[in-house]
Length: 276
Image 1 (tube, helix red, strand yellow):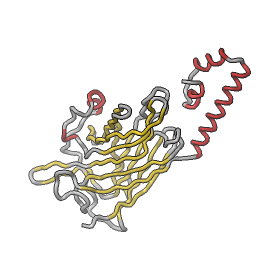
Image 2 (cartoon, helix red, strand yellow):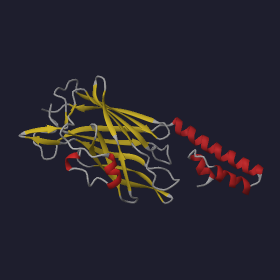
Image 3 (cartoon, helix red, strand yellow):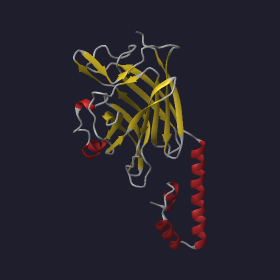
Image 4 (spheres, one colour):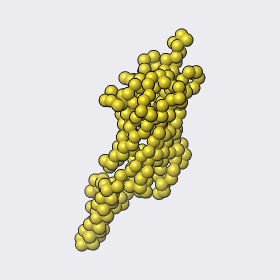
């Protein structure tokens, strides 16, 4: 890593700087370091003045294999969220995503009882293969972003598989293979929000380093699907049940994102009322 790279990442690199000073005359070394530091400060100021933007939409779709679910008042459903992040603050891409906070509408209900769970330690050590099938919290989604590959920044699409976590939470296993191999586990949990919202999901997204010292991965767009069910006799037990009533044209949903470096973005969406 160069001295410039050290300063851009605001990392402590005393040995690198010391070697640089030994190899260069005092005056030129100081001037060089001041120039690089100035560029770094300007870069940080530009990042602070700009912020990524975010848009999303949410739809209720049927739970695979379960009739009578989907975009129906009071029915179980898979909630499908599709989002796009725009920004150039981080090497021409949005900064790495570090957190997500989703506010679901009041009247939406969660029923984690009866579903199996998969411990984070199991996925981190052995991947998702040992997880019980009934711990899968929804159909597989996807995430597309930009990763460091050698000295280049290239696009990669990874799968996103949600699992039920111990304690009532949901964790997402992100699995990418091309052009770089990556596996991360993003944990999350639910709390109660205040009207007009109901359940609130608070998730964490680990930083993804694909090349040591290079820029971390940046998320740009993706689709996440959460929702599952099982049979109890003839009755269908759904993890997510959408509200029984819908007024004022739809249900309010809000999402707040946190990024590496401290930037944030917020967006709202009104989910249309079901036709039935």
